Image 1: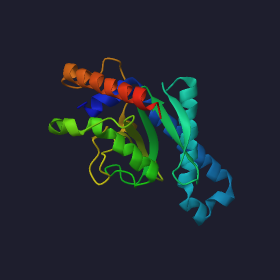
Image 2: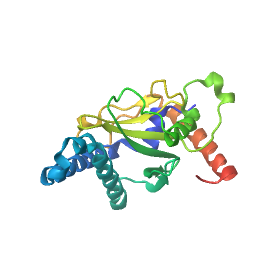
Image 3: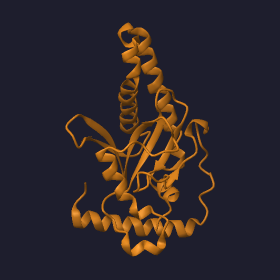
Length: 216
């Protein structure tokens, strides 16, 4: 099956990665300024819920980056399974992504219905060729932008496992530590030819699923 890292690089090239920590720094700084200027947001209960302000600011940052062309994808607002609000879904050529605040970047985010449904679409990225016959495409593969909960000390791109209790199928290095601009001649992953062949086959399966089921 397709290598998760190679698939991520196909959907979101490494040269675009510095955009993410930049927009997150801007979002966190904006929230800090808003809180500093508004005493109502400085009380304990508001401080406990600062994550909501951060989430809105980060969503705004991604939408602005997409609209400006800094991130090459589309987006749409999706309803949660329960009618309590909406979340931002990023639409890449053959995958979707969403943004999650997590306290621990080594553990998959807490289970919610939309995320649980999305992680089940990642069978095509499982590294078990002996089970290839049992694996099938049931939708666009889904991956995550993970960032710190209250403080911005990490940002990762991650592919969740279909098993919410398992490790990530792939988790990038901390994007907060990468240069603001990355050279275009960054070495590709090993086994590039095989990885490209596997990705091409996965894309064909995804396109076949789209024709049979309609896009999501």
